[in-house]
Every structure is written in C-alpha cells, then in structure tokens.
Image: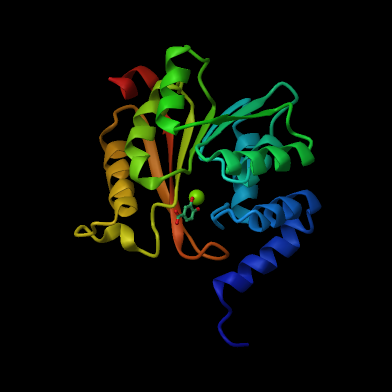
Amino acid sequence: MRTPSPDAVDAYLENVLLGQDEVLEDTLARSQQMGLVPHAVSPLQGAFLHTLIKAIDAKRILEIGCLGGYSAIWMARALPEDGNLISMEIIPSVRAVALQNIKDAGLDHKIKVILGEAKKIMDSLIEENQSPFDLIFIDADKVNNSAYWSRALQLSKTGTVIIVDNIVRDGKLIDENSIEHSVVGSQRVLKDIQITPGVTATAMQTVGAKGWDGFAMAVIDDVELARS
Ligand code: DHB
Ligand code: MG
C-alpha cells in the first residue's frame, strides 16, 4: 500500500465511527447549495465537540460563528433536554440557512442564533448578566479572536472550557512576520491565553478533511483570577 493520506484516514474513521447521518449531510448539502463558505468543522471534529460536551456534562454552550449550523447541530445533539446553545451569525442570509438546517434537525427548541456582530452580541450577553456558559466555541473571523477571548472570560465560570478553532492554518501560525490578519489574530489569542492567570491550556494540530490546522483549548481553573 502506498502511504495513505490523512484525508483517506479521515474517511476511514468517519466510516467506522460515525457512519451515515442524513440530517448532517443535508445540512452540508444545503449550505453548499446556498453558497456558504466550506468552513464547517469536519464530521470527526463535530463528533469531538459532541463527545467533549457529554464528557463535561455541559448544559449551556456559546458558539461564536454559526455559518450553516453544522457544528451547532453536532453540539446541541449532545445536550440534555434542559440544555441550550446560543450561536451568532453576522450575515442574515447565512443565518437563514442555519435556521432552516437547525429546524430540519429538530433542534430549534435548543439552539438560538443571534443575528449581528459577535463582539456586540457578547457585550450584550455580558451586560444582561447571562448565567455563565459551560463550553464556548470560538470559530468566527480570526482577526477578532483576542476580543472574543476576553469576552468569553466574562461569560465563563470556573470549569468552563473554551476552544479556539483554526489556529494553525497550514503552519502559517509560526510565521512571526506574517501580515495576514487571521494569522496575527491566532498568534495574539494564543499569547492572551498564555498570560491569562487561572487557566490551563493546550493546542492540538489536526490533519484530514479540513487540511492541516488545529485548535486551542483552555479550561478556566479560577474565573476570578482569569478575569483579573
Ligand atoms: C476558515 C474558517 C474556519 O472557521 C475554518 O474552520 C476553516 C477556514 C477561513 O476563514 O478560511
Ligand atoms: Mg473553524
């Protein structure tokens, strides 16, 4: 056998572990039909988020960047009956696609997709004194990752898990001379995570269906310290 590709291994793992899922396949098909960018998490990454949510017994999830609702569906499916997920999307026509996908997945009672700019929405949630989230998935425009991180801390409690998607980008992350806004955004948020007291963090590289990328993951050990 020639050296297999990460893509082929992803296909193998998807086939063995996940099998067919009509709802999620329809979600991706509609998203593509409606011209959405193909930036949804991969099936195995969706299953990772789903598994993590069950492992930490999360009941309240915040997602920054909804797109077609693919990851929101994966995550909301892991929630107990009284759990809920708030997502946000800045483009009205994209949000409309997400709402249809979420409705078809039978999850409209669990997922709310707020229309607007994520920073402003997060500021409103902070101002409203929303009860803290158990898991926050940051997956929107990478240039604002730092702003999302600082706001996520305000929406956290001790024990909250925060994930920041797409930090590696074919290794571009380590180019300290990069002027790409998304790369600089990822470099900045990692430094922010590092200097935030009261958090434990790591980052994992990923290969496969979404190419070479990775995510950072942090858990809040002491929320008062993390906000100080
Ligand atoms: C991009 C954004 C994503 O959230 C992702 O998972 C992959 C790519 C992008 O902006 O290119
Ligand atoms: Mg992403």
